Image (cartoon, rainbow, N blue to C red):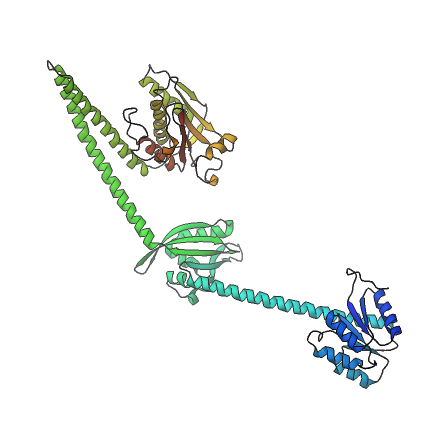
Length: 527
């Protein structure tokens, strides 16, 4: 009986003996013990069988015609393919010299006939166990060599990246108080040349050393505590840091990420960029101050012209035989003065808003909207217009600034519904994560993470609208989507609205269809 069930197979054994009865008896014993058995009746057959399919172990008789067991063993041990196969000699020869010779040619054990079954099985299993252990050890050695090679390559790549990087890179571990567990400092593990030079040190002065707290305290004592917060919370941070070393002044952009019980730091020298930004900021401030000053002075001059023009008009009207052309010229001067004053006020408002501090409070936005509608209606009592205001909308924002923004949006709606037979203006709120919210948020290109859990507010009208191809120009100062002959305006109101919404870290966008109306949406992220 031959059992070839691989799941129960305890090993592949080749039995070599020129006596069929010996082969049959030994084969039956091993098969019953769940070994897979192959048989060979002479040396040459045994060698071919071993080379074709390497067995786990060979049981080899010594006394055989043509080629005895010693010769077979020598041949197998000289062949690289079969050299590692363990060979147990089984022989009736009991002399010590025979046993010694068996071990000299490469045998691993020697069993004397007649044998005990339990002894044969024990010796076979012992050699198979040794063989398995050798294979496992070989596999582990190969795996270790492979791992070491990968590690060596990784270290080479890491070293190359660190040394060639234009950014400063470091890895540091936290040092904790033994009693409280609180972080008291950091130790440098990895430092590249760039970051070492930035701190005025050599790599060897930093690696393995303590003193990160002292280094960062020279820059900004708040940075060190920010590092601790990254380790304890896992929340990374980026920050521009000003650093003065001897007579040199640097700006660095610092990026910090948690790494185990420590941090990885990336430091980029942004001195040139930062100095350019600061210079541009100063130039912009100077320009805005200049614009504000010029606008303020011009407004005074235009006011003087306007007052003088009005007085001149009164005198001309009192003159007999006054011509219509004279009055028209005076009216043109007055209208031009009024338009110029509006533009100058817009410029002044935009300049002021850039540096306006936000003073957020909680208030009823619906009530504020009603007050604006009431004011507009009182200014034109004969005009019939439907106002729809959603009740009890409460926000947290700067009420003064938001009043300016809402007034501009509602005045726009008021103006552009003048030619609509049944004008209607609506104010409302779209709750976060509703189907309509998801639909409207797709009209803008912002990341959803920026406005998560924020409601959308809107001003909607059924007026003249505008072509959505011009939507990119909508919030640009002095850009008008309609002719002055159709609708008066300076083209600066929506720029002021956008500036106010952005001061609240919010966003504003619009949708419109020509002759069907417009809707302006905005989100206040400071809520």
